[in-house]
Image 1: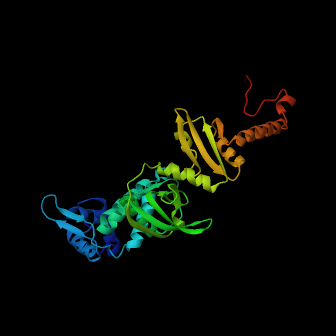
Image 2 (image 1 turned 90 degrees about the vertical axis):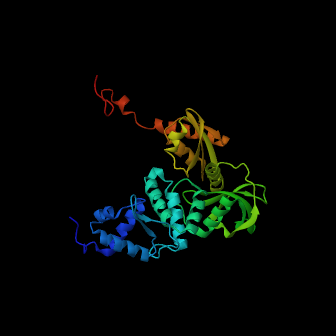
Image 3 (image 1 turned 30 degrees about the horizontal axis):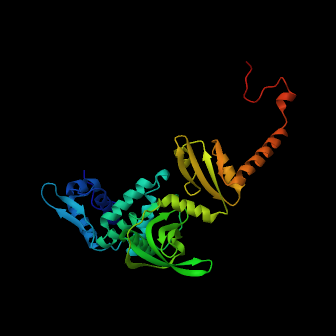
Length: 341
């Protein structure tokens, strides 16, 4: 039986529920919506009119295969976001949709799909441009100016030069670049670009840029390095005074599951080995972390780290000889957990 129209959920909650249903499926018939909302078809029609008044483009089609359909709006509905808020939300969802390991990826992707359906054409185009220019590794990055991100994303998409102010040791300088990819790490947003003044590939922190703008010059894309590994390696070389490279006796897939993406770069070596590149404030620290992976490994770089391994190994052996050997002092005793034959 259909519930009374003065349902305790209230009109506002019911209208929001109706909006959610329209976002889940392309077409709903009036009777289907009435059944899901537990109201009459007449109330469904009134709630649809409320959504239209708020700016949501709900289309009604009659005949076989017809029903209610939520279209793309001519402008953002006033109950949701302004342009800046919509793009900022899309930026967060784009990065969240890549977090498959955390379990939030599917939910973020569904939310982004819903947002895409109701965005006005001008913003939907911008968000899709950003989607094609973003890659990520790690989670929990710091916020940046969404307008700067969108400007750089458009430049990546349209293959036009970009310029921005960027600090250096001698002070701020304008940089002219050919932008290729935006990469989101666990802490920062980076731009992978070809620096025209230095004639080489560079990575730039987006939060350090000022006056980001595009130029009218188009460029022909060069063969570019793989964005994520390039940024990972570049960040490690700048962030830490020491870098180390190891050959680990385990597959790259196994080690990647053990090491956060922002902590080390893992490269396949052969069917049973991988290379691990990591940085730290001191070599003992990075050595300890590789040791805790639980796999055999070899030091590839730097040479002094191999020497350090031998020093630490001798120190551990010496420490082990100071532990009392209770078994030798008590021949009749058994180690914990042992059972007589």
